[in-house]
Length: 538
Image 1 (cartoon, rainbow, N blue to C red):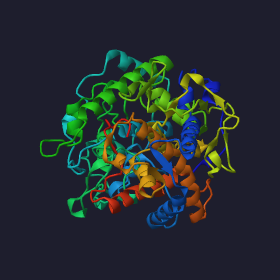
Image 2 (image 1 turned 90 degrees about the vertical axis):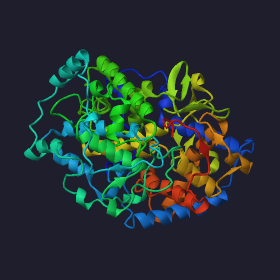
Image 3 (image 1 turned 60 degrees about the vertical axis):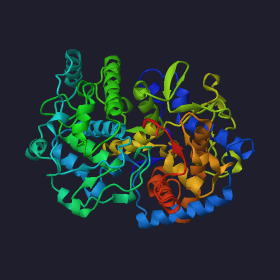
Image 4 (image 1 turned 45 degrees about the vertical axis):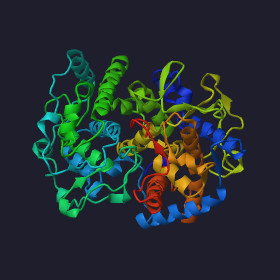
């Protein structure tokens, strides 16, 4: 891994476009600062919803450490990432993509991995409890692009591509790859339909975002997957077949011209949906990809980059020239590029802010080099944590006062883009700038272990909305307390923060422990909190 705790220059100072008006809320440090402010208020006893019992943190850390050792005895823990889902069933699908693109330039391979990751994460919403995906089943032709690309988009695409070095011809194996039926590639025979690494990562898996069962049925079914793993494998196979590309003969890409024409019927074919295999949320997913296409088109017109999700890679690395980027800059770029696509969430100063919510104790502190510092000695409120941001010396942004950002899906995407950057030879610094993901399993773990305590247990019996203060507060406590929990887990495993960054603790980890304890406490394995969400937040 290429990890460093050093910071890198702000890309805005390196020739990138000016900062987004909500850049303070796009800063990962701001997430910690405002979640820490809410935690301090809860610690002071003023919250009508929660108390925090830190005496239970040690038991929670023991559970996470023990589970981590069972899953990864050598402690070689990968990142919490969509790429773990691509490994479902023990199949090395990255190797299949690499083989298909053999002979292509390193830059084009990096663009393909970015395109795949962004599209697959955005498709990772609830599939429904009965949906299944059979990997060896051939892709329905209805999943492939049906409409000719827009003339303007096509011209823009050609113009942007003309500025790049000509790509080397693919090898014979790569040329043959698109014609192979999904599942025919080498290695798929080894698929048992199992669940590598113990389960889904941070993706929204299941109707309300939780996974009650597992990723696949069993070995006899030969690669039948459900929930997040099923959606990941389905999107991978669709990508390999060119479902997101408008260019004949260049399947391993996604571009605005194709994304804008993806509809519910195409996704139904892609995911093998039918009356006998129903999948929920197709219209919402199709609309999300269409908005992504429009956002990429607008960004390409501004910047001159190709209208692909991989323009995030181009901008971060200055078209491949920059060999070091920070995790916080990655998150900021993801948020800036994708801000127009989110159908839900909040608006701040009239602009779509996404997964950002009002809370009376959020305060106005922001990160971004304005004096907010990482406290390595005592953390926030004297409660430990090498990753917890201290308010002392931090500066304020009154225009965003009272708003707490989480950016759960964008952070999940950022975690999932770390490896594509590193595979391209780009060093990622400041990895622990990204926070723990405030969702069902991580937050559920803290409730089920008694660290976060609802003042009235009956509050867990109702269904909430993402904008309810109870949910906002629970998520803020989850972010702040995951840092404290991570320190205790590292101590038990004898690792430093550099050796075991938060991205690995989440995978090792907290998410799987949250699912494990939920199954112990509730017959259906549901998390302790119920939320009515459209899948774009959780």
